[in-house]
Length: 187
Image (tube, rainbow, N blue to C red):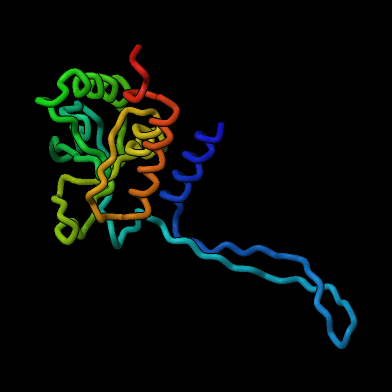
């Protein structure tokens, strides 16, 4: 339950649109030693992580999973490979069975699904290339979902969106501690 709540909060944090929220709070103030009721208005403003000034957005359909951190997507203009920011691939030479298992799980989960892609506009400043991005399928951030279910491994070396990557690391740690996905005890 806690895991689903954390994912829902994380997802809400990622996708909320810029807006100002206004809340009224009742309180008491003392004027000349006399208590008087007061009504305070509190405004808070949030900014979307995937804002138009930082990201380009497009949609497509998942047509394949060539690696444990890549979705092959058919967009209106072409087929492209989206490297999921925050996830790493498992080397086929080090653990080919694990890599095949992850690709198979991702294929079953995402093949033929509609995907929203958010690619950073300033990718060069962060050691990324145009094929890097974030993906959302069925209103869920793909990277967070894979890590939460123990079906992904997060990268520790990227400096892009550090708060988001810290959340990814927490999700992976939770999956390892709770033995989900690839972190299940074999035996």
